[in-house]
Length: 372
Image 1: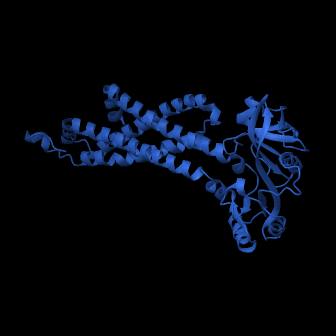
Image 2 (image 1 turned 90 degrees about the vertical axis):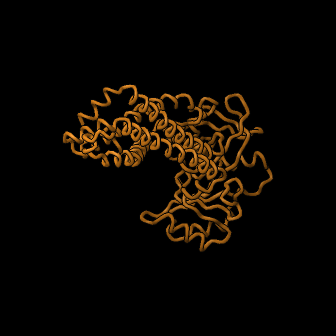
Image 3 (image 1 turned 120 degrees about the vertical axis):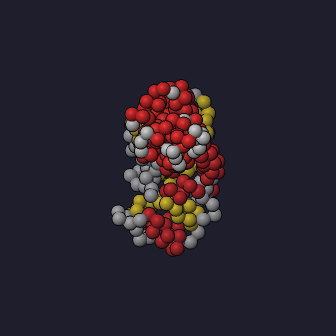
């Protein structure tokens, strides 16, 4: 320990630059992960944060909620499936509304109050308790979707009052309103007043306590014709655009996770070569190899953790500039990322450790130079 810190004290600039480099790379990993989470929430936040553990679409929709319609007989059959505690219609459609004095595209979700499909991330206000009340997304409060704001469906449709604000509730990168089923039906009839019946886009299901959602999914798919049941996570992962966004970011993140340990490992390998004479002399006067290895590992841990602290500061500051994406600092993912980076850095330092263990103390007495 003393040897490790003494060397770092004597080479402040060298270790300081490495700490800064590691901090910048870890920051980029954290920032990319948060951007990914924010973008995915913009696409499917409303699905992710509704209360149904299972969602059922029409099997012709190809996991696209916009293209799905559930027939009355299908809904009735789903309600009879073993393990289904509650199967409730869930409607989804995009409307032109007036909010904040401007016309905007808004996705309206309709669900039956007190049943499956309700938003789960309420942070202010309350859930709808009657017609023409809605929960909106926190991200859009400044655009006329704040608590108490009135939003009118066009043309000349219902006037909906926002009574609750929820976090991460957008869908298809658009504002979202969660309303009761009657309000959703009225909004749909604004566009099509001759419609005899408004059909739900999907069915949201509460699973019986102790029952696995995946088992209920299998039973529905095996029993009810013309539908595709999915767990909530499967519906999220299968949503159009989500998989491609995740794949793109996965490549970027993989490169960052590769670069950080390579930079750290290469640095300590170069340093080991540079101080070969000093290490050989220490071995010659009786310093155990394990002491030198422990010193190296301590330096790797200190540099990586110090770099992570730098990264956290940059990360928290940078997120203030992208609040429009609805992202926020998440401590646990940041800590987990730092631990993964530390583990990778320790793994790549094995090359430098191997060089240290190959030091032959007798080389200090031969006058023939030092070889690692």
